[in-house]
Length: 284
Length: 163
Length: 106
Image: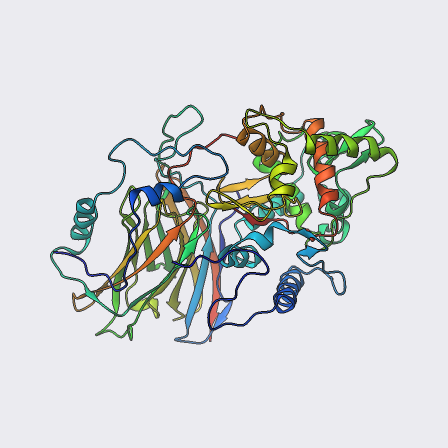
């Protein structure tokens, strides 16, 4: 049986002609349609799935999974978006406030937010990611308990907030006070670890696009997170992904929310600068 | 009593099957011996649902990808060619997954009010196999259709890492 | 967790065949997976889905572990009269998840 390689320069199926610009235009139209359907004004701001040599994980998916991600009903990640929407309006804590009390309509107030995280937090003198920022607001503004990392509620809110930036290009700041943490993230990325003695760069730079047994290795971009991952059969965060990758090379994973992972998150986000936010993306 | 299959299936050898399974350095754990559905179990499951009736191939179309990059979520659409009139309509559609630990995937009860004999869903497939659909018609006949699929990363048999 | 998702046209013509899409959050644990310790995770799936149209059942599905997690199902029904469609999912623990949608049939 003829297997089709999942690379942008693949042979078209017999009887069908395709051009990569045609695919790109098609993807842009799809993304535009999806975002327009989501009520976001994105004229002229759509980001393509490939920017220079940086490729979103979307481009490594089968057609079926690309279609699933683009499906504005059946994308399973949307279940978390809806749950997040409900939580956004739900009062919590002794102040009786909700996210909406301060931030109003998320489509307006949260637009573009996810593209800038993780960011440097002057309050604690280190980086803060979106999950931690949500918990910060809960603790400090609502006097509510923070959600545990990777809990359904935190995933739902992070996905809901991330979704408001769908299609916008990732654009994190790595200079100024963020710089040393960015460098720490880069150091993590090229550090060998685990019994298999591999660093992130080995798979995701050196062997991206090639096969690892039955799977194709992507560039390991984070623009789609939190993602609905088929392997997990649920939605998961970047930190869960990092922990999974570390475990896969037989390295002890860091706790979710650890500084090491937040620094890595900034480096990985920078590595995928310009790629569109696809939250909630569908991945294998 | 064999079910006829409308499309040629390229069955994989055991070695080829093992080469297909596995992913990203993860250990693949096959279940305890005898965990897979045997052909006899599949036949028994079919008999339990349609009795002694002999399925006739034709009129049942499965839209299933030829290759699934993950067996955890495989889109399937089953369409039965039927006018859906009081005299001629589909009562039930059964979907079988003979390569999974359990051979029956689902039964859909349609009836006259369905209007169109078509369902779409997402399957979980443990390995490359042939998916079979049987449609029970109002006149007690049974029609069948099938499609084969290669599953690159199987479901059901991977360890859950808990992370 | 979240409400189940359904997509039903809000209006339809008398006798029109309408497509209904449903999606619900559920692990659909097969009973064949193992955890990090090698123990089998017990089966926990939605086994029955029903759709009633003004109280009358118009569609039913019996599900087995071969259904993917967070199960998606699309089916058809004839728009006979205005009213309410009720969707119910029942799982192995007896939990019933339900949601409804209104339809206006001209």
